[in-house]
Amino acid sequence: MTELVVGKAGRPKSVQKRKQILVAAGELFLEQGFSGCSMDMVAKHSAVSKQTVYSHFSNKEALFTAVINAKCKDYQLDSQQLEHESGRFEDILQQIGLQIIRLLHDSQVIALYRIVIGEVSSNPRAAELFYQAGPQHNMTMLAQCFLRFHQGALTESQAMQSALVFFNALKGEFHTKSVLGLDFALNQEQQQQHVEEAIAALQDFIKRLMQ
Image (cartoon, rainbow, N blue to C red; front, side, top):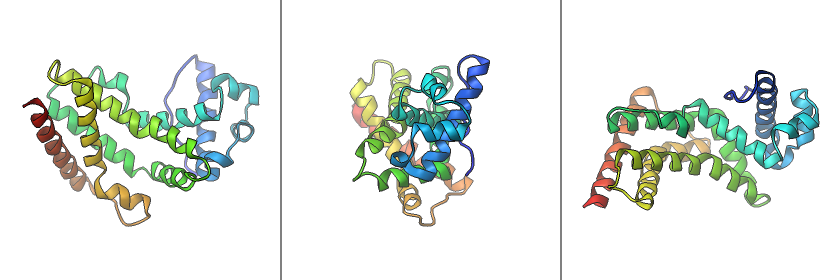
């Protein structure tokens, strides 16, 4: 199984341990599912003690959330990074849109979607955690970006509605096909066009909100 690449945090020695744990956990969640993975398994697979695992992550839910957050960060979908973005709003949307589409094309992300859907009946908590750390996190990030670029023109509720419109427009049909195992991949030109269409839909929605 390909490793989940994660970001760095903490002191140099603990950074490596944390990365080992996240990589091991990512592999195990993909292989065993959320329900089938345990902290003992993660400790063994990452070649660290169980105590070390718990020193970084309080429980399996926190670890699962961290794995998803790390994957989002791989695609620069991080609120701290976006706070420092400057330039035309359309250019920022283009950048974010392409990053989200590339994230949704990631084979590990698709696999996690399928695993979570497969466990909905037996363990709905996994779906809740996945939604909070993935889609909801990205929509909240988008809403904050919209508020920053439309200072005073949008309420927080309107910004979140706009984020939902943009995020769903980006997912489109290809995401549904990917989860179902159908032919879905968009080439670079198609991805660019898809983002432009999503931006147009977003701008129309925001224009109606501001009328």
